[in-house]
Image (cartoon, rainbow, N blue to C red; front, side, top):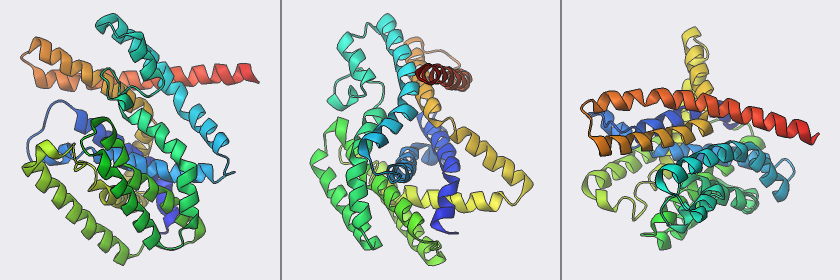
Length: 335
């Protein structure tokens, strides 16, 4: 498989990643060994950033116009986000008395960056930081001739994250810069040659990933209180997330040769087409479910958590089609 062939399976990556994230946020913690997989679901976000790095490099490279690139990102992402966040803010104003500055902070994706309470989720502010950095990262990527240069720059980004240790609002973001940059470099390499992903490379990547995960779980079980403060939740996945993506591409290629496998690929690709909506809706529903359980302490907690998946699915579909309709009206009227 070549690098160019591997990135054709990005929708499968995204479908796998969002299901892993939903599994991670799911309030009912499963018994071992499933709890280990559930607890490492943060890596789904790293898969997002790796895949986003690929997509953003390819998008920016069309014309290498930063303003045009950011406009395309805005049109692609923000209508869905704004529809959702306005509804969510109205709900919070009514039920929790959210003040106007916090509403604005959420609308402009900066509330979590300030470290103040009331933010919906840190990911959306991080997303725009990464988009703004994309032209600068692309300039570095284009100058790198060998993989060693990419490794060196990623190490510099890791070093850059050290001053943000114990800065709760920012450490979760800066530790993701290396995996985003890796995605951009992966995209560049996929466009420049038909070089195949060799067994030797996969063995090396697998060994590094296993070492990274061993380090992660050592910290998870022995230094759990320090995982967030020192970025230990995320450093291991700089290597692991891209490796998982490549394995998913190999699995996807194998499955597409089988009738039943094609249906599995189609299912993950289908979910991958709803990742943004599903991310927004599941966080809202799961947070409200957790608050409901904490306040009322009902008897059937497990049943409630599984029942919460129903509004997650319904809300995701409604948000997708609502946003699609609004975008169609806006662009139709602008012609």
